[in-house]
Length: 239
Image (cartoon, rainbow, N blue to C red; front, side, top):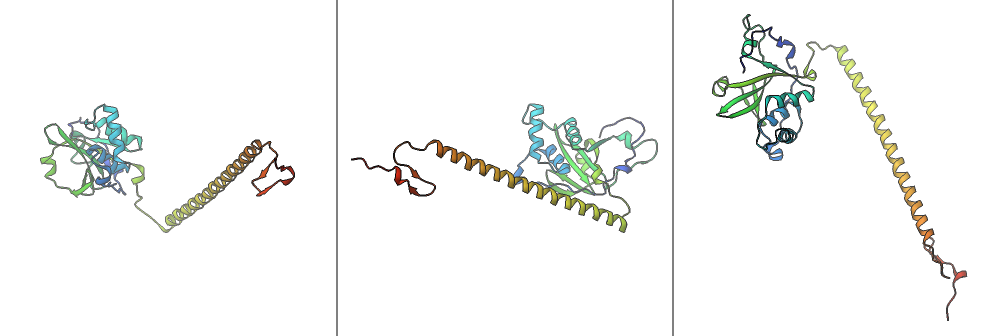
């Protein structure tokens, strides 16, 4: 965590995640995309191989680590806010005025060894690292000191403190409307697809008829292939 400056602290109470579902990808499928890509995917749900490839393209090096700038940029593309937390920003002139709580989604880089930094996601007492989840250990921050730390927020994580019967009725009505709209759209697309297939079939038959008409033989025998008989009026047996 950086030192920061003694400026007006950020009120973190508005960044509590009432809902957060970490996205866990199966390592046997996605391989080892790197801790930065894994942390981003844990938050956004996007395939970690996407972040790994983009990072290689941006850095020009296949083994380049995931910088703070890259992490913040990728989160911003998906509508996430990343509020950096600093030592002086948290411990301001008022004693623990704005605390970091279990409801906050924390993205932090930790020093594992010399020149080896890893990204992890922390929420509700759990640490998510490379799609593995363990309980948060207070000694972890001593054995693996934090380098930079961010509080991550997205509007979809907001959950209202009160939820009445009227709220449920309004939500149900909205869901029913959305369901009906999806059905109408599906029926429209189905009709369009049927019309397209019908038009393609008519054009295919028309092209086939034109091809047969253009290739009609000029000899005395004409076989009507489509009807399965021979025009005997034009048939003449050569001696």
